[in-house]
Length: 552
Image 1: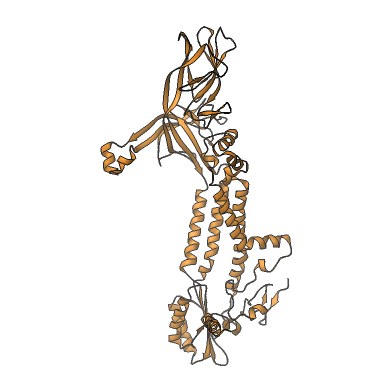
Image 2 (image 1 turned 90 degrees about the horizontal axis):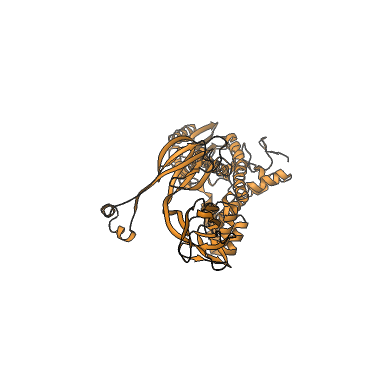
C-alpha cells in the first residue's frame, strides 16, 4: 500500500491517522473529529492496514480483542464443564476399562457419554490445550499489533506540533498573552519541579512524564504469555506429575512417573489428641466433632532400581534413604516430592478360610488369600484344592445375575470359588461373601468357612513434580508489575508553543486521571501567565445536554 506524505514532508506508513512528525490529521475521518483518539497516537496498525493474504487474515483474526474475549469465554465454559463430574485423576481405577466402567456404573448413561467425549480428562485434552494455545497466540499478536507502532510514534514525536494537532487535544487553550522568553523559562522550571522531562525547540516546549506507564498492559500480556506457556508445558512428559499412590504397610511399590524409584512402607503412625488436649485446643467443639487427628505419617524407605527396572519388579533395589512423610513435610528426590495426603485405617489385608464338609464340619485344610494379590490356586491336604475363579474387591450386589464391584479397594471382598475334591474332581462352585455364601450351580457337599482376617493401615500419598513453577511464578510476577505500572502511574504530556502572530497555544493529554494533568497545568499557568484552557470533552457534554433539553 502507498505511504502517506504529510504537508510537512514526513513520509508516514499507510494507515497512519496523525502525522508522526507534526501531528496533522491525515484522513478525512480524523479531520472531522473535534478530539482525536490518542490511544495509539494515530499510528498505523497492521491489522487495520493489510487484509489481502492468508497471513494478513490470520493476523487480523488473532489481533482482535473480541476474538480474544471469545477464546477466554470458551476456556471458561470448557473449564466449567470439566467440573460437572470428577476428572480421571479422582477416579478409583487404574486402567481404561475400569475407568469407563466406573463412569457408567456411578453416573449412568451421562457418565458414559461424558467419558467417551473425553471430558473426564478435559484439562489434558488436545482441544483444551489448543484453546489455551490460541489465547497465547492472540495475546502475542494483539500486543505486537499495538505496541510496535505505539513505541515508534512516541519515540519519533517532535516537540513542535502543528496547530491542528494541538486543537484536537482534549485540553486546549489559545490566546494572546504576555508570554515571553522569561515566562517560558519559568514554565520549564516549574515543569521540571513537577518531575516532567522537558524538550525545547525554539518557542515550543514538550513536557512529558510517566511514559513507561503506557507499556503496563503489554507487560501484563507478557506475563500472561509466560504463564500460559508454563501451563501448556505441563501437558508435555517430564514437566509435570501429579499422581496418587496407596501404599500399604510392609509393601514396596514403584513410584509413578519416576525413573525407577520405589517406596517401602515401614510403618504408618496415627496419633489423636487426648481429651484434655482436645479441650484445650478446640474447646467445646470437640464434643461435636469427636476424635481429631494430631498427626499421621508414613515411615518409608526409598530405593532406586536399575535403569531397566519397571513397576512390579522389586529386585536389585539400591537403598537411598529413610524418611517420615507427614502432611506438608514430603520426602524429596530427583525433582519429585511425595506428600502424605490421606490414609485408611484397618483395611483388610488377608482373609483365611477352611475347606470343610458341610455335614461333618471336617476340615480339609486352610488357605489364606492376600487381598492385594490373590492367587488363582491354593493346594490343600489329601488332594483337595481351591481355585479362585474371580475376585470382587468391593462387592455391591448382582445386576442381572452378574456380580458387581465398585472399586478395586477391599472394602467388601467376595470370591467366586471352585472346590476340588476326590469325590468331585470337576469341582463344586460357591460364591463366598463375608457373611453369606451362595451356591449358584446347586447344593454342594463342601463349603468355604471363614476363619480369620488380618488388617493393615494404608497411606494415601501424592507424587508431585512441577518444573513449570519457576515459569508460572515469573509470569505472575511480570503480570503484577504490569498491573502496578498501568494502574498507579499515568502518561502526561503538556505542549506550550508561541506562534509567530503572538498567540500562545497550550494543550495537554493523559491516558487517564485528567484531574492530575489539569492540576499540573494550573500550577504552570500561575507562574508563566499562560492563557486559560478548556476541557473540550466537558464542552461537548454540555452542548449535548443543552441540545437534549431544547429538543434538538
